[in-house]
Image 1 (tube, one colour):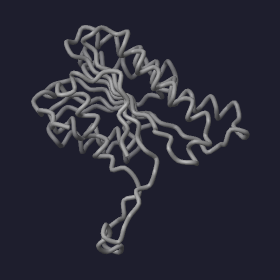
Image 2: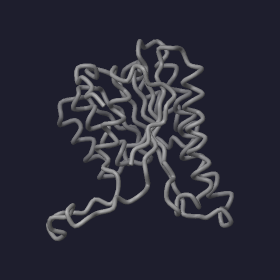
Image 3: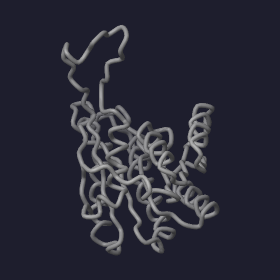
Image 4: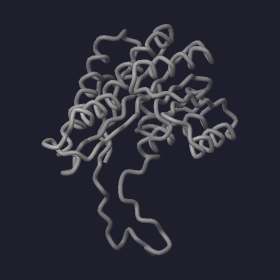
Length: 242
C-alpha cells in the first residue's frame, strides 16, 4: 500500500462522525497533521473530548467539535449543518459511530435492537444523506465507512450488531455503484480478535503494555489511504483489517 501524499489533504474539509471512537480520533489526528480542516462529531463533549480537540488545534490546523447525537435524523442534520456553516463544503466523510450491546439474540429487547440499529446503520445512512449536499459539487469526494468484521464468537452472538454492520456494507456497495463516477465509497472492516502474543513479542510485560487488538493508528492509515488519490481505482470495496 503506497503512502499517500500529505499535500493531497491540505485544506480538505473532513467530517468524522464520532471523536469518542479511538479510530475516529486517530484519523482526525493524522488528517490534521496533513493540513486538513477537521470537524469531529461528539455525542456529548466531555472534558476528555475537549482535551483531544485542543490537541488537534495545537497541530496548527483548524479543528472543530460539534456535539450532536447522529443516531437521530435531527442530530445528523445538525452535524452537517455546522460543517456548512463553517466551510460551505465537504470533501471527505468518515462514518465511525459504533454501539455494540452485549445481548444475545434471544435476549435482545426492542429497545436494544433500536439503539443498535440507530447508532450504527441509521447514523451512517442519514449523515451520508445530508453530507452529499455538500460533497456533490466537490471534484473528488470520498466516503469511508468503518464497520466490524464481527469475527469473534461474542460479536457473532450479537445478531442486531451484525445485522447493522452487514447493512452498512450493503449501503457502501450501493452508494459506490449509484453515486456519480467522481465519488469513491469504501469500507474498512476491523477485526475484533485479540492478537496472539508469543514470548518473542513481549520483551518485558511489566514495562511494555501488551497490545490485545488492532492498533487504531494502523486502521487510521488504511482509512487515510482510501481517502487519498492513490486509491483512485478502489470503489465499493470492504478492506478487512486484522
